[in-house]
Structures are given as structure tokens and as C-alpha cells.
Image (cartoon, rainbow, N blue to C red; front, side, top):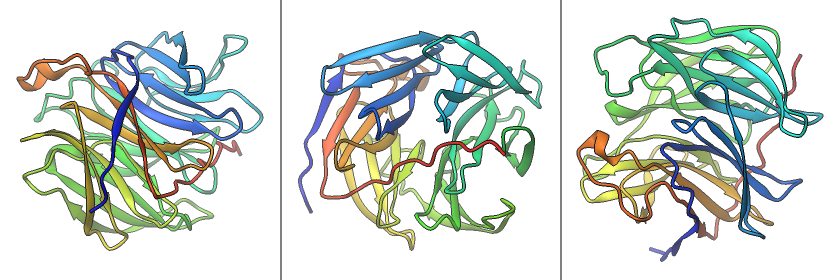
Length: 297
């Protein structure tokens, strides 16, 4: 098995570092600190990180065709222009904000924004359930209900398969996706994360169609696992923190795997370390795919 060197590239000290997304045009990494309510832009070439405070808890976002971002905050989905600071509410959250919030999301290959909701208190295992939605710029359509943990959203290179994870069940599911309508069918178990590893959290897909999942809170620490298109665990990269939360490919040739992390170890009975909440980078022999920009209809 190949050896991988995991290096910290930003001492972000994020509470919940999530949703890394590489901009090919800008050659930079966008990311969120959910608990800190901060949207960020990290430039690996300079080491500089620019941040924007958010008015509500953010769950995920997508880069929008024509510029700016579309971001799911706890109160709804908004268009936001980081350069001007202009906000526009697109659609209000379809849930009780005292109990739920938006979380993981990304675009499919057709440019729809898929986003899920989950309990506002992630430690509440018996509380409310959420849903997975697709958003076309005007209408928020409920696609999967109920779900508990909105995590691991990813799409196959051909756009015909959607993946999502149920973190505390250790399960990753796959669905057939009808490209034109966004209709999902044929739910099936794609993979179960082995007990000796962590829990499936955020994820990405490489050019070979393999699914890379952050695996936080494992018995021996945190890691990232690569699953082949048939659901077999292909390799595991250990990360030097307990809570790696989401990977994303980036860099000039899309072969560098960036990994965000969190510093909320006390919530799972552990202690933070000096590297907790950092962003890490790993050079790999694999290639990622540029994320499709959001195309409002």
C-alpha cells in the first residue's frame, strides 16, 4: 500500500471545519467553520485565509455560475456575494429551526444543489429527523425522508449515482439519479464502515468513481477511506487528529486531497490537540473532479 504524507497547511482552529471546495479558476480552497459561523477562502500559494462572518449557522454552500455563492444557513438558502456583501434569501428553511439545521450539500453534475437537514444538536440520537432536498434556484424539493445525519453527499462522475451517509449507523447509501428530473430510485447499501475505523462524515468522488469519506472518531483516531465503485474499502489514510470531517481534491492537477477537521473532541469524550481544527493536505496519485457550479433554473 502506498505511503501518504498528511501535512497541516492551515492552523485554522476551526470548531467544525467542513465543506471544503476547490475553485479551479481561483486555485483556492473555500471552506466553512460551522460552529464558528464563518465562510472562508484559503489560498495555498500564499497561506492566507480570508473569512466572512455569517449571520446564521451555515451547513454547506455551492459556487454559483456567474459568481458568488449559494449557501444554506439555518434559516434558509441564500445567495451571497463575498465581494459586495450582498445577501438575498432564496427560500426559507422548511423545518423547525429550534430543532433542525441544514448540513452537508453539493451540486450534482447537472448543477442542482442538494442539501440535507439534521438535528441542531448532533448528539441527540432520539430527536427529530431531517430530509435530503434538491434546490433549483426557486423550488426546494424533498427527495429523501426521513434521514438523521445529512452527510457524505457525492455524485458519480457520470452523474447517474448519488451517495449519502448515515454517520452514526456507519452506513453509506447509493441511489440511481435521473439526470433530467432529479428523481432518486433504487436505494441500496453501498458500504458499511468497519468497526475498527471511524464514522462516515463528509465525502468526495475521484475521477475513477471512488468514494472518499472522512472517518472521524475511530478507536485509534481519525482517517479518510477510499471506497471503490463496488463499495470495497480500497485504502485508508490516517489523519493526525481525531475529527477529520471532509475531504476535497484540489491543486493545479486536482491530485492534492485537502481535509478539514474539527476541535470539538470534548463532545465525544476526548481532548483537543494542537492540530485539532486544522486543514491538512495530502499529495496523492489520484485525480479529483472539478465541482459543477450551481445553475439556477
